Image (cartoon, rainbow, N blue to C red; front, side):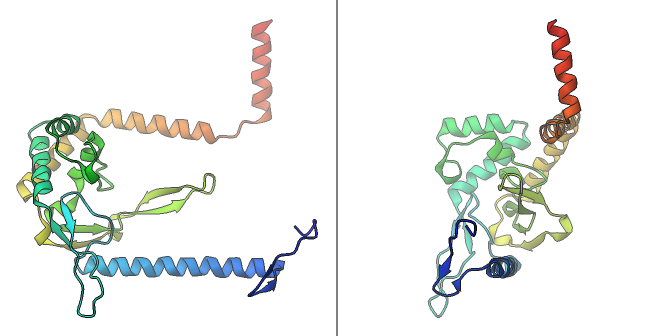
Length: 240
């Protein structure tokens, strides 16, 4: 813009120079980081007080009430009895040997509404064990709030946010026995079956993980000019 002779003038700062760009950019970045830290401290305090710090989980309703001065009390939940029955049904079926896919098909056949009124899928039930998502891994069903399992950072090459698992020592847990839906015996039975399935399919899981890592590395590996010349030479030799 300087080359074209174009100036940027604002009401609050007047003419914008390179100094404004550098200083304001730094100050804005610091402000956003401080705001994020304050938000996380607020969420941590809410979790430690036994209140939800995120979205609504299947099996629960949002409790809407206000304090003495009329301000809404946030983070309170109550058990949705109809959805709680479906949660217990899922745990019983899985512990008895049914696959998440078969359970999802059965629930859809019966017309049981899934999360947010959508159809059931096997991934909704199975989830991800280490990340604690999915019906079978949600510790809230045994009366335990867990927060800070993962964090999100921006991939500079794509601009998209990607998740990173936090160390378990950084997780924040709070006991909320009034929100328990699944008893310990049923929870442990489901965990035992998950462990057994993980043992049976360990080799397959490792192979898939290694294949994905190889595809990722090959997709991002730069191709040198020497490789390009060698490939072109082999192509010419084969065609002659």
